[in-house]
Amino acid sequence: MSKDTKKDVELGHGGGDDEGTYVREPATLDKEPSDAAAKRKERRYRAEQARVAVAPQDGPIKDRGTARELARQYRYQHMPRIPRKNLELYRGREDQTYPMNTPIFKKDRPSLADMGIGISLYFETVLLLAYVFLGMFVVCIPSIVLSFMANPSGVPSSGGDEGAMAQMAVVTIAGIFKKPGSVYGCDLETCLFRDGSTLDTVTAVSIIVYADLGCCLILLTAVPLMRFLFRRYAEAVDEGNVTAADYSVMVWGLPVRVTGKQIKDHFDRLLDRSFAAGGGSKEGGGEEGAKGDPGPFDGVADVFLARADSNVLVQFDKRADLLRDRINLEAGLEAPDITEGEKRRRGARVEKVAAMIERLDQQIDGVDKTGVLNPVVGAFVIFNSQAAKIDALDKYVRKGGNGGLWGVIPPPHECLLDGKHRIKVWQAPEPSNIMWENLEASSMERGLRKLASSLATTLIVAVSFFAIVWGKSYNQAMVDNKGACSQVSFAGQCNSNLNWDAVTPHGCPGGESECPLRSAWLLTDPVEEFTVPLSIDTSTGEGVPVLL
Image (cartoon, rainbow, N blue to C red; front, side, top):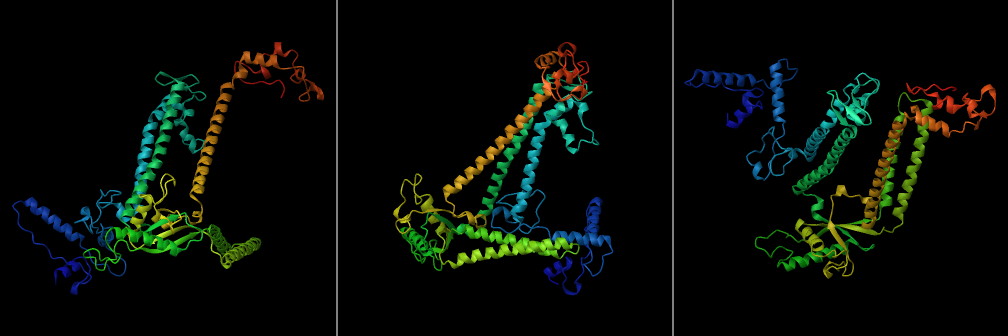
């Protein structure tokens, strides 16, 4: 039996007459000068023998040890392995399992990104959010401590009727103010703590407000940080993967009736000049050992023209949505518990959706039958090599092919399409990131859309902020003035300003249609007899109206 066959038999992979079993000969224990060492070796041997289990067999596994061993082996065989990459820190570690201290994302060493960028982004997001919430908790510790110190009796009970959100009231500004019957807490001027110390209420409120502001700043800082990290990961992953964007450029400013052949010939001539300036030829014979190599500047592979087809694309999207609605409605018709009335209504909706789909099909067919192509709004040029794409992009982006100083400085003549049309060349995005229905929008139009969206968002935030501040201020003003009616000076001023002789149709005694305000409240001399409106008892603050 060969060495490989012995290994297969030992791992239960079969081999020879021992297929389906694990075979391992008892190891001979070498004598050691120490009895303790011999006992340790014996224990290791027995533990090794205990891990040896029979191969999987038909039917249920009745032995618990066998099931445990089979599960362990299955897990070991299906664990993620370090891939083979031509990187220094990967060498010697290929096909090994990932250790527990594997980093989340590294592009030069084994990391969770090897198993998929989504896994790496998930754990990176969880880790970053853990740091964010930890930082928010640390910043809010003074606010929480101050709330409990100011009003320890104001903590809501878990079984209260105020709802789950009421439990958070203790860590807000409302939690530091005195509750009815509470000894400790804050009033409008001073906070009294359990140990007898005091603190200005404005200072206490400021601490809580600034702590909340710090939490908001931490969260707002984490959002752009996460976007930066994700963008960096995407760039690192893109470096190790070849996609269509690595061979493509995006061209703008083209004539509306340009053809793909014109664009292809233009970039081929541009690359021919570059390669001729380097002293070579497109056949690859200008360099030693270049036989069979097409060379770095081998021209354009294909040109894709982007036309003003947003209307058609929108129609196709709408048609897909209608088809989805129709399928769902037809599936509902087959439900066993559907009533006859519901079945008729669903049937009518199916017919309505089918008619809408038919009208869309007629509109789409009408576009095809016109025989006139929509104007060109841009193009994607795909090269045969990355070097050709880099050279073309370099001529336009770095060497003035796009024009300098916002188009004031003209580009070189060789960068003009057909010798007269200025064009703009940029790096093409990934195909999945292209919004095809927005390609026909100019750069100015896209900029205006972004500006309008930003202004609308800012306006909504500002209006919401001022509405909340105004509401809170009004509410606080009402709270501050709620006891004014029980003040004698305020009541006297109120009574003196009232016209008690004014005629009112409400509350007249004896069923009269009209009477003076004095009679409605059954008063003879309101200024002398009643010093408080509605006869409010200033000692208790409770109102005792004379007539309701």
